[in-house]
Image (cartoon, rainbow, N blue to C red; front, side, top):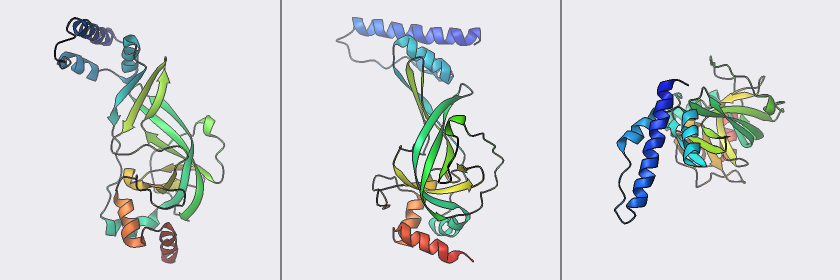
Length: 241
């Protein structure tokens, strides 16, 4: 760590301590906004440095600013409906997850999913991204696949650090999902080609969960398949040559 970064962290800690002392001497005064200098200094810190700062303050948790990922552009519902057959469409639930710090700047996660039902299969979309499955997720069963995501939660030196992927909800363990994937059946590795529009939260009976946020996939299922995954499955089969 460079001397300039150490100085930056020291400055943030010093400002924080002054704020605590000031708050103790002005308990009856209206709450004041935090100094802008503290905010600007913290904005320059790397993830590992934010964790170090949180530990110095005695804080057990820290929320890292959300990360942004690039996904394919989502067409309108009518075009999306026609493109569904290009992807593998699966009902599955996450059974294992593990997060890690990537290059000291962000948090990333691996998920292992158990396949409940495959509605439609397609060749994986061509990608130049190469990833190595973590040893802890191996072997990958015939009814399983791995998915890599931005965001997650890690614990370092007793501090729990969390980061969200902007606009893309995190997966909940043991919850059922409808997923539109680019899946390589040989490696067992999958990708979300359309970000948040690549999955929907389901009920245990495979009905659409009302808690799931509206997106293009939900609109397609409701508008063109009557909200039924069984009808979606049959409609996709009917398109096969």
